[in-house]
Length: 316
Ligand code: NAD
Ligand code: AKB
Image (cartoon, rainbow, N blue to C red; front, side, top):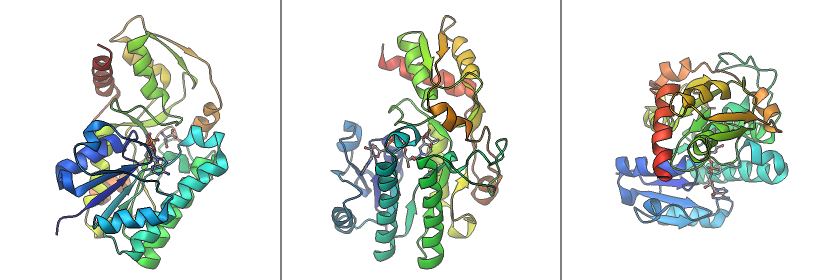
């Protein structure tokens, strides 16, 4: 029987690309896209789309049952920067939504669930260079605390109820289709828009702040890779480290300058600097490589060229 997929949060930075990729694999009619807000036409007209608040348990059960859903990709969340502005509301959305999805997966015996974690699960006491898969985890942001708790719940539902949840600790994701949604790594997306529009960017992180990043195509491949891996290959039932590449705002600026020589960046750090300073500078993702074959193909040069070309098209 063909799998039927539910994507929750299809209008966001990841959902807007993952939904289209899933439709290519499983067929347009077999991927039901949902979000609390309208999505791009490509998604709403290219296959089934519903407005759905993932906190509305009753409607969520209805959508899953009516569409005979077998797998869920649950992407709805409040990201690190926005979550610090509304800690309790963000905790509620991030945790209740995951518990709703896990409970439903248990009750309706769904085959698999994908829920993303983040490098935000690490904190100031974590080793920051080549952060290992298993290490000290004492996040000090509400987003990081919710992701760490979510990882524990995912593992708990697997061992206690057999819910086959799979997860990646995404680094900062870089893409051109949909703008980033209120995180700390967003500078690495915004910078391309400002480089194209104004040849000038005010960066909210300091020039030598190294963070792990990944181009969206690699993130989508990794997401589908972990979901399609045979269950016996999944040794980590919390969430897998995913490294991508690491760079600082200064290095990214220099790469952009190779294409736009008069591009200028000024630095005005804000509350997100402290968040970035508590996160890893680089990640060791060997466990994911060994377990199910994680691969990254995009380096800073290649992603910069693609970002400038594609963001450039939006303003030409
Ligand atoms: P995003 O903010 O761009 O998209 C999230 C989507 O969820 C939005 O379209 C939003 O409308 C929707 N949403 C919010 N509340 C909802 C609700 N109550 N019901 C239904 N939909 C709701 O986020 P993203 O960057 O696409 O991230 C997706 C997931 O990946 C999140 O769990 C995030 O924590 C995780 N993640 C993202 C990154 C990144 O760099 N983008 C890195 C690490 C982890
Ligand atoms: C954020 O900055 O909040 C996200 C993330 C790394 O989880 N991009």
